Image (cartoon, rainbow, N blue to C red; front, side, top):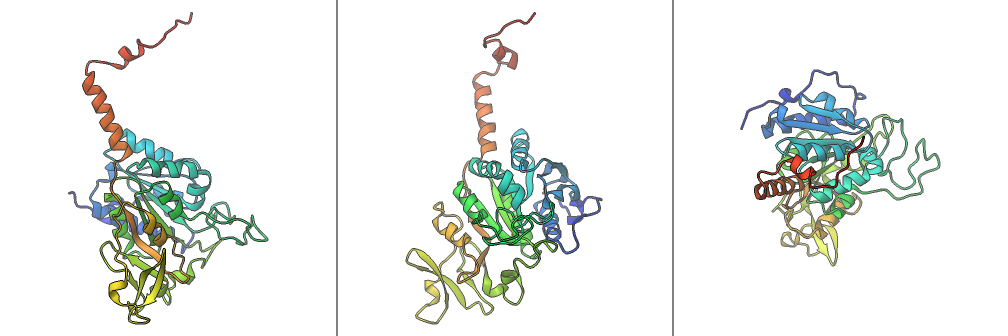
Length: 335
């Protein structure tokens, strides 16, 4: 494997985001992750749609494509299928990905194309100056909902897993210590990996995630899941997740008869998505928000299956050229 440093993946472009934007943390984590992966910059492509997060390709010393609104997943799919050897990343936001781009997103996930989707979720349209997005909470007041929204939001995990997604993880924008490892794991996963980033917009939605990411409460309001390990959290690591009928429950270990052996062990590899979805939908109220790799299941990938199918057909008819095929069709001459 080639040896690289984070600086090898940084472009010379001036980074144009608002000071304090959560996108800076994502960019830094991505640079570090790519250095760890050891894939050459010229074998890497970063695709994006439209939005603040979609400026990210400009700041990468890799191939990049700043596409049109919501179509990043389609372009990323085409890029991977055309050149399966490329490491392909999609930088997108909650508006770009889940509104106009929603259909492309769910079908990329369903097909299990081997791309990595960085879904930066700040629950607002930042680039277009503060309208509510598909992930804004019911009642959210914004420029486009001055009296509060009257609709329920999308939950990215619900869409990804509902679309038969095989990899879903969640990180915090400022967690540059743990985030690179999650991105590395996502890249090594064969198939579509979706990484939701809990992101802060300092201009139009500042502090929207403070109830879970603030350092004073983060230990009690979040849980970092690790495959094969007990689901424990809390400042004193004395809390855990247990099964309560068909639901999950947060308990204090050693109180009310809740012993450590009753705390669930995280299995990210199980094919059945039921528990993964329950974990992914914990909201920071009675149950902590799940971070880390929630689901990581192996399955055939679209690009590999397509490449194999083409090779199989060519092997059966090695001498057949495109012109030979075209001549088998109905033809006519225009004069």
